[in-house]
Amino acid sequence: MVESDNTAYTLVLATMENNESEEWPGKRAYFEQKIVDDETQQWKYNEKTGSITSVAFPKYTLAAYQGWLWLVNVKAKGAVEEYPKSVQKWFFSDKKQTLTTVIDGIDNQISIFGQPQQWAWAEVASYEELNDLAGSKLKIEYC
Image (tube, rainbow, N blue to C red; front, side, top):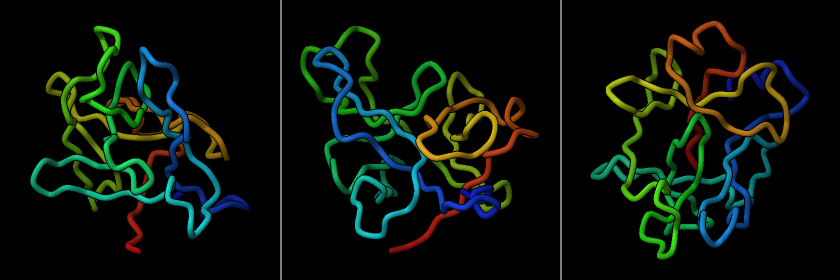
């Protein structure tokens, strides 16, 4: 996260280790202090599908749902009806420094509402909604 340059921490996108529940086999995504060898903070981009998966949980992909960013297993059995069932495509914009996806024809990006801080849940909203808010720019570091 670019805005973490102004904090005591280098904030990176991470994921929880456990699913929310059996009916919601998804892990919350949040921002946390960078730990070099932590696989819950490492991601892989699949150029063919546009999906982003966790190194720690390769069967899970990033998905936006009701304004929050999740790591979900789209092939999970027994999930509630509204659970994401298809892989979501993501794009990185160098110009805007955002990680975006299209929801209902509108570009949405990953961010934090308010001040960047550790353990803040990753949120997803339209570019217009987040344009002037702190915590809305990301950068990619290759490992």
